[in-house]
Length: 267
Image (tube, rainbow, N blue to C red):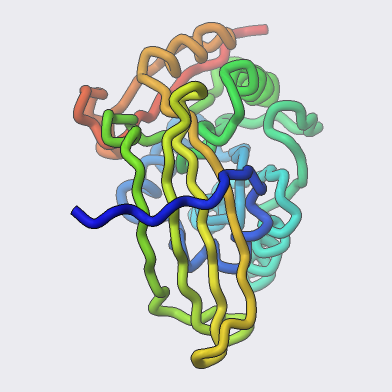
C-alpha cells in the first residue's frame, strides 16, 4: 500500500474559503433526500427554519416546492452565494426564501416555524455537546408547540478513524472565472476530541498556471445514535423517530445515515 502524503497542520477555517466551489462539490439536494424533507414539511407545516443553510443547497429546492424557508448561516460568503442563487429564482419562489446571518446556537428570529432542521451533517460541525444542546434548544424555541426539530448526520463507523488522502479535478470549471479547479483532501482523526478532521486545498488554474489556492479546514464530531437521541431528550424534545436512511427505515448499526426527528412540547 502506498504511503499517505503528510497532512498539513489542521486548522478550522469556517466555510468562507469554500463558498466559490461549494455548489460544484455538493450539488443541490434532490431525490430521496429532498423527498424526505418535503414529507416532513407536509406533515408538520409549511414554515421551515434551516440552520447552516450554506449556499441554499436544501433551502432553494424546498422553496421551489412551496415551503416558506428561513435559512441561517454564520458564513457571509456562503450567504452571498445563496443570495445570488435566490436572485435567479422565480419571483414567487424568491418571496418564500429568506436568508439571515447568525449562529444556530444563539440567533433570535422574530418568527415561529413548524419545523427546524439541521441537515447534511451540519450538526456535527458544532464544537462539542454543549454547543449541540444549545442548538437544539434554540431550534425548539423557534418552533410552535407540537412542531418538529430534526437533524441529518452520517452514521460514524470505525473507518472514520482511518487517515485518508485524495486528489480530484472538477469536471466543471469555476462558473464565475472559467478557471480549472482541483481539490486535494487530507483526512485525520483526532482521538482525544473524537472528531474527523478534513483539510481541503482548492487550486485554481488558468491553463497550466496556478493562479489561486484556498484552504478549508473543518472537523466533524463522530457521534453515536444514542448520543444524538440523548441530546434531543436533554433539550426537552420528544423523540418521534430515528431513521437509518431517507426511506425511513429504522436505524441499524449498518445504516448510512442517522435522521433523528423530535417534537416540541407545549410551553
